[in-house]
Image (cartoon, rainbow, N blue to C red; front, side):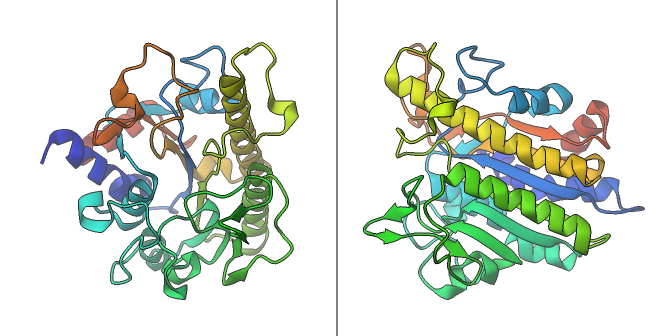
Length: 317
């Protein structure tokens, strides 16, 4: 197995251990994982001045940039790897409805044994063949999102039907809101309710955002930057800024509730970006040609210094 493949497999399986090991003598940290869909190497403000991502940039400035992190070339295998702690080769290499084998234990089920309460807001894509594949059957206490690989950002329609589920049942009457707004609102609600009702229980909040996945030309007009003249790139930039705003809303909720200082935040892409996001000089390895794609992951925790974060991650490798 190549070194980068080992690192990709170990990273997600170990993300919880970093925080929990540090806090063994006190309380486990809250964990918030943000995944951006079809999100490119060049789609962040600190690399590309055309794109406006101040809140993601702030995570990078105050956190740790892990520069040897790889994701899979397809969407569902990356998610399945994260949720199962296994290489895609051993869990799921397809973008179909099968997802993670029901015989496998998933991350929120493991976290439940450590006292965590787990919630999902966004895209699942880890299986939809049976009710046993729903997030609630795989360890999440609640979930709001779609099960498939793609749906309309506004109507949540895909293949002639609405793909939107609220925990155990179809989310009747809840479609029709831009996905980035809907999942942001749910994530904020989860944080606020957890702070009010769950006391000292640690939170695992998984926010696999719909942005910046196709349909590409779907973003509220307020996010469009007229300075970008290429229409496809302009829309992609707007979708990226909408994503950044949603991450900001979740961080602000953590801050309001007093949870931020005890929260481990991770941000990563799922896989490569649409062509409209990438610069013409970008290497093809960053756009899905290689079997694994390099996308540095961001780790931020106010309760741990850069040196402590670095030391913890070096122990993994």
